[in-house]
Length: 195
Image (cartoon, rainbow, N blue to C red; front, side, top):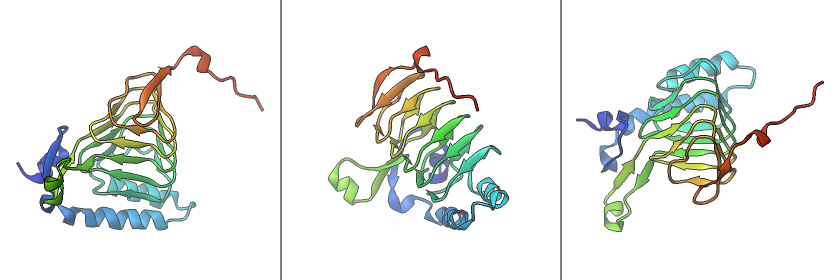
Protein backbone atom coordinates (compact mmCIF):
# COMPACT_ATOMS: atom_id res chain seq x y z
CA UNK A 1 0.00 0.00 0.00
CA UNK A 2 1.19 3.53 -0.79
CA UNK A 3 0.61 6.64 1.30
CA UNK A 4 -1.88 7.77 -1.34
CA UNK A 5 -3.82 4.51 -0.89
CA UNK A 6 -3.87 5.09 2.88
CA UNK A 7 -5.07 8.67 2.42
CA UNK A 8 -8.05 7.60 0.32
CA UNK A 9 -9.19 4.81 2.69
CA UNK A 10 -12.02 5.22 5.17
CA UNK A 11 -9.68 4.26 8.02
CA UNK A 12 -7.43 6.12 10.43
CA UNK A 13 -3.68 5.93 9.84
CA UNK A 14 -0.43 7.37 11.11
CA UNK A 15 2.58 8.25 8.99
CA UNK A 16 5.79 10.23 8.89
CA UNK A 17 5.26 13.75 7.58
CA UNK A 18 8.08 13.20 5.09
CA UNK A 19 6.01 10.41 3.48
CA UNK A 20 3.03 12.67 2.74
CA UNK A 21 2.66 13.48 -0.98
CA UNK A 22 3.33 17.21 -0.65
CA UNK A 23 3.72 17.51 -4.42
CA UNK A 24 -0.02 16.75 -4.65
CA UNK A 25 -0.75 19.85 -2.55
CA UNK A 26 0.59 22.18 -5.24
CA UNK A 27 -2.38 21.81 -7.61
CA UNK A 28 -4.84 22.24 -4.72
CA UNK A 29 -3.03 25.33 -3.45
CA UNK A 30 -3.04 26.87 -6.94
CA UNK A 31 -6.72 26.07 -7.47
CA UNK A 32 -7.62 27.50 -4.04
CA UNK A 33 -5.62 30.62 -4.84
CA UNK A 34 -7.40 31.00 -8.19
CA UNK A 35 -10.77 30.40 -6.56
CA UNK A 36 -10.10 32.98 -3.86
CA UNK A 37 -9.23 35.59 -6.54
CA UNK A 38 -12.57 35.27 -8.35
CA UNK A 39 -15.15 38.02 -8.19
CA UNK A 40 -18.65 37.34 -6.81
CA UNK A 41 -19.95 37.58 -10.39
CA UNK A 42 -17.73 34.74 -11.68
CA UNK A 43 -20.08 31.93 -10.66
CA UNK A 44 -19.28 29.77 -13.70
CA UNK A 45 -15.53 30.08 -13.15
CA UNK A 46 -15.97 29.19 -9.48
CA UNK A 47 -18.01 26.11 -10.39
CA UNK A 48 -15.38 25.03 -12.92
CA UNK A 49 -12.54 25.40 -10.38
CA UNK A 50 -14.47 23.41 -7.76
CA UNK A 51 -15.05 20.61 -10.28
CA UNK A 52 -11.29 20.43 -10.82
CA UNK A 53 -10.41 20.79 -7.13
CA UNK A 54 -12.77 18.44 -5.30
CA UNK A 55 -12.85 14.65 -5.58
CA UNK A 56 -16.64 14.64 -6.05
CA UNK A 57 -18.34 17.98 -6.49
CA UNK A 58 -22.13 18.12 -6.71
CA UNK A 59 -23.25 20.94 -9.06
CA UNK A 60 -24.98 22.61 -6.12
CA UNK A 61 -21.77 23.08 -4.15
CA UNK A 62 -21.28 26.74 -3.23
CA UNK A 63 -18.20 27.89 -1.36
CA UNK A 64 -17.46 31.50 -0.42
CA UNK A 65 -13.85 32.63 -0.53
CA UNK A 66 -11.56 32.43 1.24
CA UNK A 67 -11.34 28.63 1.08
CA UNK A 68 -8.30 26.44 1.73
CA UNK A 69 -7.67 22.69 1.63
CA UNK A 70 -4.67 20.38 1.57
CA UNK A 71 -5.41 18.13 -1.40
CA UNK A 72 -8.98 18.60 -2.63
CA UNK A 73 -9.31 15.11 -4.11
CA UNK A 74 -10.37 13.80 -0.69
CA UNK A 75 -13.36 16.18 -0.40
CA UNK A 76 -16.71 14.79 -1.60
CA UNK A 77 -20.04 16.64 -1.77
CA UNK A 78 -23.24 14.77 -2.63
CA UNK A 79 -25.92 17.47 -2.82
CA UNK A 80 -26.60 21.09 -1.98
CA UNK A 81 -23.60 22.24 0.04
CA UNK A 82 -23.25 25.84 1.22
CA UNK A 83 -19.88 26.76 2.74
CA UNK A 84 -19.50 30.28 4.07
CA UNK A 85 -16.38 32.46 4.35
CA UNK A 86 -12.98 31.32 5.66
CA UNK A 87 -13.40 27.55 5.67
CA UNK A 88 -10.37 25.26 5.98
CA UNK A 89 -10.49 21.53 5.20
CA UNK A 90 -7.39 19.49 6.04
CA UNK A 91 -8.28 16.52 3.85
CA UNK A 92 -5.48 14.06 4.54
CA UNK A 93 -8.33 11.51 4.78
CA UNK A 94 -11.71 11.48 3.01
CA UNK A 95 -14.21 14.18 3.96
CA UNK A 96 -17.79 13.28 2.98
CA UNK A 97 -20.37 16.06 3.04
CA UNK A 98 -24.02 15.05 2.63
CA UNK A 99 -26.78 16.96 0.90
CA UNK A 100 -28.39 20.13 2.26
CA UNK A 101 -25.39 20.84 4.47
CA UNK A 102 -24.76 24.38 5.69
CA UNK A 103 -21.30 25.28 6.97
CA UNK A 104 -21.00 28.70 8.62
CA UNK A 105 -18.00 31.10 8.50
CA UNK A 106 -14.69 30.13 10.06
CA UNK A 107 -15.23 26.36 10.16
CA UNK A 108 -12.24 23.98 10.18
CA UNK A 109 -12.62 20.30 9.25
CA UNK A 110 -9.31 18.76 10.34
CA UNK A 111 -8.65 15.12 9.44
CA UNK A 112 -4.98 15.53 10.28
CA UNK A 113 -3.30 15.64 13.65
CA UNK A 114 0.02 14.97 15.32
CA UNK A 115 1.33 12.20 17.57
CA UNK A 116 0.46 12.63 21.26
CA UNK A 117 3.88 11.34 22.34
CA UNK A 118 6.29 14.31 22.24
CA UNK A 119 9.22 12.31 20.82
CA UNK A 120 7.08 10.90 18.02
CA UNK A 121 5.62 14.34 17.32
CA UNK A 122 9.13 15.81 17.12
CA UNK A 123 10.09 12.96 14.77
CA UNK A 124 7.33 14.07 12.40
CA UNK A 125 4.71 11.38 12.99
CA UNK A 126 1.21 12.52 12.20
CA UNK A 127 -2.27 11.04 12.24
CA UNK A 128 -5.32 11.23 10.02
CA UNK A 129 -8.92 10.02 10.21
CA UNK A 130 -11.94 10.57 7.92
CA UNK A 131 -14.78 13.01 8.61
CA UNK A 132 -18.40 12.34 7.59
CA UNK A 133 -21.12 14.99 7.72
CA UNK A 134 -24.62 13.59 7.21
CA UNK A 135 -27.48 15.06 5.20
CA UNK A 136 -29.27 18.18 6.48
CA UNK A 137 -26.55 19.18 8.95
CA UNK A 138 -25.88 22.78 9.99
CA UNK A 139 -22.42 23.54 11.40
CA UNK A 140 -22.29 26.90 13.20
CA UNK A 141 -19.65 29.61 12.96
CA UNK A 142 -16.07 28.90 14.06
CA UNK A 143 -16.62 25.18 14.70
CA UNK A 144 -13.70 22.76 14.55
CA UNK A 145 -14.47 19.16 13.56
CA UNK A 146 -11.64 16.73 14.33
CA UNK A 147 -10.66 13.60 12.43
CA UNK A 148 -12.66 10.45 13.03
CA UNK A 149 -15.91 12.33 13.64
CA UNK A 150 -19.28 11.56 12.08
CA UNK A 151 -22.12 14.09 12.43
CA UNK A 152 -25.52 12.44 12.13
CA UNK A 153 -28.26 13.46 9.74
CA UNK A 154 -30.21 16.60 10.62
CA UNK A 155 -28.04 17.64 13.54
CA UNK A 156 -26.95 21.19 14.41
CA UNK A 157 -23.52 21.98 15.83
CA UNK A 158 -23.50 25.21 17.87
CA UNK A 159 -21.12 28.06 17.07
CA UNK A 160 -17.63 27.76 18.53
CA UNK A 161 -17.88 24.05 19.27
CA UNK A 162 -14.95 21.63 19.06
CA UNK A 163 -16.29 18.29 17.82
CA UNK A 164 -14.00 15.49 18.99
CA UNK A 165 -16.41 12.55 18.87
CA UNK A 166 -19.33 11.31 16.79
CA UNK A 167 -22.62 13.21 17.13
CA UNK A 168 -25.90 11.29 16.62
CA UNK A 169 -28.66 12.27 14.20
CA UNK A 170 -31.34 14.82 15.00
CA UNK A 171 -29.72 16.68 17.88
CA UNK A 172 -28.33 20.07 18.85
CA UNK A 173 -24.77 19.68 20.12
CA UNK A 174 -22.57 22.44 21.55
CA UNK A 175 -19.43 23.15 23.50
CA UNK A 176 -15.79 22.22 23.90
CA UNK A 177 -15.73 19.32 23.80
CA UNK A 178 -18.98 19.24 21.85
CA UNK A 179 -21.78 17.35 23.63
CA UNK A 180 -25.42 16.70 22.84
CA UNK A 181 -27.58 19.44 24.34
CA UNK A 182 -30.98 18.05 23.30
CA UNK A 183 -32.98 16.43 20.53
CA UNK A 184 -34.47 18.56 17.78
CA UNK A 185 -38.26 18.55 18.19
CA UNK A 186 -41.41 19.94 16.57
CA UNK A 187 -41.07 22.96 18.89
CA UNK A 188 -38.05 24.00 16.78
CA UNK A 189 -40.24 24.43 13.67
CA UNK A 190 -40.42 28.08 12.57
CA UNK A 191 -43.33 29.93 11.01
CA UNK A 192 -41.71 32.40 8.63
CA UNK A 193 -43.34 35.71 7.76
CA UNK A 194 -45.13 35.83 4.43
CA UNK A 195 -44.23 38.81 2.27
